[in-house]
Image (tube, rainbow, N blue to C red; front, side):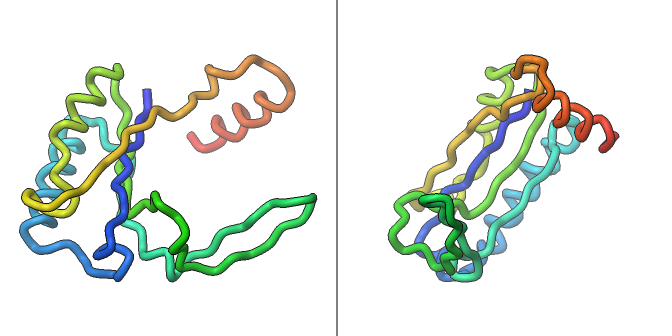
Amino acid sequence: MRFMIIVKATADSEAGILPSEPLMDAMGTYHEALANAGVLLDASGLRPTASGWRIRYAHGKREVIDGPFTESRELIAGYTLIQVRSREEAMEWARRFPAPSGEHADGEIEVRQLYELDDFDSGPAADRFRDLNMSKS
């Protein structure tokens, strides 16, 4: 089972303010524990939305919209992707995640389970994705 731990953006992360040394140290310790347990798949911070863009799909057309995305309430500042045996194990790891803005600052993470190819019925479209997944091994 794969889960994504999503770190919510803050005004500081959107301003490009990098985490403090103590927070980087705490994140390093946490991610080393994930790696040592064999459950860490990937982790990274995301640059502010000012350096990104969106593609809006409407009426059969695509429109590129440059950041920043000030109209959005929920932006993502980073993520950690883990693979564990159960939802409970994912929850145990998530509870240990360092406070993303520092121990005494407000912040939030969200945890979501990823779909696996086995969640989809067999068929030509799903089988194409299975074939792609197999070629990565």
